[in-house]
Amino acid sequence: PVSGSKGPALNGQLVILSAGEEALQKEVQPMLESFFLGEAGCGARMKLVVNMVMGINMVALCEGLSVGQKAGLNGKDILEVIKEGAIASPMYGLKGPKMLEGDFAPNFPLKHQQKDVRLAVDMGDKVGQSMPLAAACNESFKAARAAGKGDDDFSAVYATVSKP
Image (cartoon, rainbow, N blue to C red; front, side, top):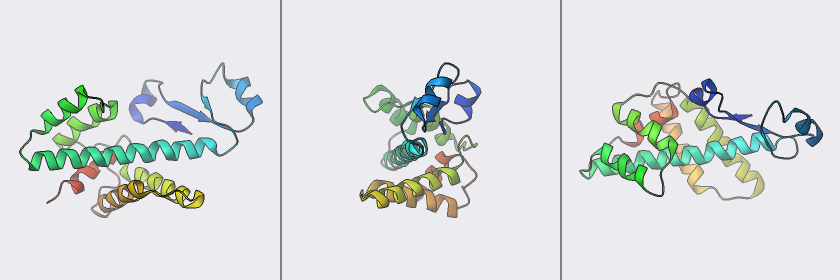
């Protein structure tokens, strides 16, 4: 699997997650730089973990923007303060301004984000790991899908999180 969306793909900056036979990975490493994660299946599990964390962070940003704006703060100011602090994130900087403009042109469809979060919650069940944040995040994405946002960018969860 790879980690990254349309922009990183166009710029040759996808993160490649490999797993399986280590000898084969070493053979292709000079041509295909990747993270080797161990036995077959580890790459897919890593992608679920990364996408779960990304989804949780997106829902957190949506809730922060929504409550802040409802409390009288300017959305752009919220993003600027986040950008300058310890929780700065390239994703927040890229998606935040577009969210405020209502631009949800798809780079990573919301329906795929929700599927990955759901599969991560299922993985947690299988290994006995409690996943309350991921489960709540999954419900936010499910609500956005039910509202017709499945083919929009995953940041379109903002449209449902920010409703009164």
